[in-house]
Image (cartoon, rainbow, N blue to C red; front, side, top):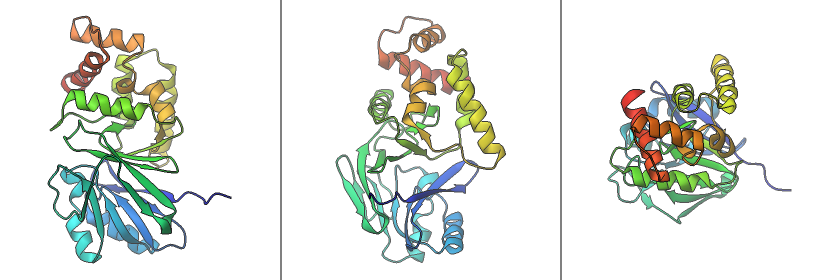
Length: 264
């Protein structure tokens, strides 16, 4: 019988970040994804009897890397993985496309994917059991802004993630679901799946639970930034842009600019 997948727990940080902890009952080692703040991590480790074996960093922004130094000081020998091409203090190994990280004690192997766009050297970590730690590239019903990357890079990264199996679980780094649904309903006011997702999200937050993980199948039904080839989405983006949009990249770019300028 296949070994049960590890448990993945959200550790809240700042106002809306999630630091993901990957752990297993009876095993001291854990993994931590994007620890922007050491304080909540240390409290969680002490409360649950875990010790970080590695930190997995998706990109260089402070709310994803701010806890590295304190955690490395507290846990000597801590492995810290992060993307090639970005200067991130405290990394012990740079990773990129095609890399594989194995953690036998947790029964987990992760494949590294290059998914630039939000930043120029962003990576994601795809677990062999179907977990996707995607930082700020893909959000629940949204995607990251373009900072040091390009719209074209982000489009191609999302196109790649869109092709993952529908059951892939999306562990992004922020609790943005309800806000993103608001914009998505501007784009597709008649999308019934969005109404269902909104009801589910409210129920989660009312119960003090994250709205994550979502699934790739759900994102393909609800996320306008993965729906550039849906006629209603293309039409809405064209109306906002005031011109005909004849490529998927132009539709995506218009959607991202629309959200940047008129919604956020």
